[in-house]
Each structure stands twice: as structure tokens, then as C-alpha cells.
Length: 258
Image (cartoon, helix red, strand yellow):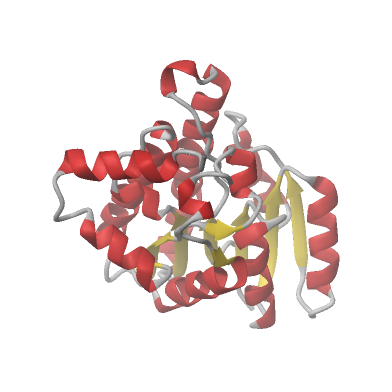
């Protein structure tokens, strides 16, 4: 029986993914900041007949990824599937945003994801077996005025994941970059963009549907997967349109509905 480690597992896409892994008899290591929500999720998942280890951890802390790796090692567990799902965004102009929010997004969305990949990938390569999924966003395909750091961080995740996927080809290990669009989770409310045009006028996908797309993508070993036809069309269109137009539209959809 394999073990999947999922960050950001106490709610949203991460929690729905955990249920899908448990359904197919994967043991779980769940990581999140909220101990209460994590314990509740673990209890529900254990009822499905799998073992669940929980680690209450804020991955924005600089030493958190190493601490997580040490906890897994101390428990005598092997990570066969790594899902770097934890991430957050913040709405607002860059010059007015707090340093804590700016650096927190980079630490979680970029640094922690990169470090966790580096910590668990060598073991997978040695065993010639393993899967990694880094959750990016369709935001990563264009610049994002009013969410500049978040969009840039997800662009990094896409580029990084595709590059590492190429490096480990034919190794028995796959790296998948999964790109959801707007999704019905607590993310938007925390980011402050739940009242923007992208959510109010274009709608969001159910977390269950997005998680299923993600699960299929990682288990099939796809390098890049975008959830939803509309999101795929939007991502593809950014490759052809003039950059200034793409940036202007990106700002428009990120503005609050009047």
C-alpha cells in the first residue's frame, strides 16, 4: 500500500484529494495549519480503512519543510506520492501590500514547494517509483495586476514542474503540474477576491470536480493538466494574444464587481 503526503489538506481541493486517495486505499500524511480541521478530516478518512498521519504545520515558516521531512522519517514512513497543494494569494496593489503577505506567498507557494520536492524526490528516484504533483493555477499563464505576487508564484510552479518532469523522464518518477481555475473553496475569501469579476461573473468549479481532475492527472503521470475546458481555452489564448492585452484583461477580471 502506497502513502500519499498532501499539504493544505484540511479543506478545499486538498481535503477532496485526500478522500480520493483513501478511496483507492492509499495511506495518508496530511499537513495543514488547522489542527482541529485536520483531526476531523483524519477521523473521516480512517473510517475508510486507511492509516492517516497528521502534521499540524505552517509551511510559511522557513524550517517547516525540513521539520516535515524529519517527522515522516521519524515515523518510519515512505512518501510514494507528494502533493504540494498548500498555497495562498492576496488581492491588492503590490506597493500597498504588507511585507508579511508578499513574502508569505513566496515562502509557501514557491520556497516550501521547491524544498519539499527536493526533500522527497531523491528517495523516489532511488526506488525508481513515485509521483509528485505541484498545484499551480491558470493564474500562472499570465501576469496578474492586483495579485502580482500570486500570479508570479504560480508561473514559477508551472515552469519548475515542467523542467523537473523533463529531468526525471524514464526514471519511474513522474512530476505533474496541475492548474485549476477559480474553484469553490475557502481560498477566494482568504485572498479577498471572492467579490471580483472572475468569481462573480465567470463562476467557479466545484472542488470535488477539480480534485477528481487532479487525481486523474497525477495517477496518469501527466506533466501539465488544466481543470475544465473553459480554463484550458483561457490558458491557451494567453499564448497568442498581445501581452499588454492579456495583462489588461487579467486586471479587469481581478477587479471587484461594482
